[in-house]
Length: 103
Image 1 (spheres, rainbow, N blue to C red):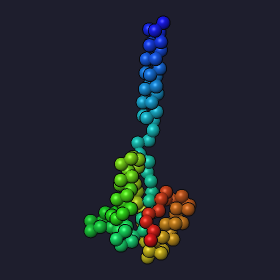
Image 2 (cartoon, rainbow, N blue to C red; image 1 turned 180 degrees about the horizontal axis):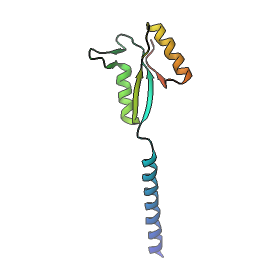
Image 3 (tube, rainbow, N blue to C red; image 1 turned 30 degrees about the vertical axis):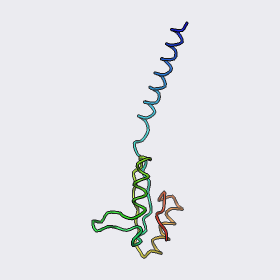
Image 4 (cartoon, helix red, strand yellow; image 1 turned 45 degrees about the vertical axis):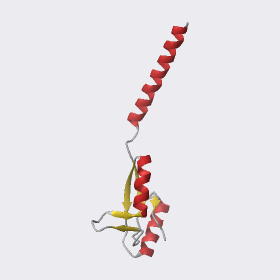
């Protein structure tokens, strides 16, 4: 009787492992998160190499260590007020997922 119980337990564990592997194989590898990026000197800016920089970028890179997100920064033209207004509209309409630092 104990051998049947052990065999059933081994079978159930193997079934759970196989089911988990199959579910992970079907899952998308990364989620794309679009982040509005208003240009604000000292807070969110493009560095001398044209790369995104600042507190928001550092924060999202740390968050990415735990989320497997693919961060896509979205910029718009205009002065800071125009950028914030356009990015807020994009956030409300679902064009972007998150809006960066707003001071």
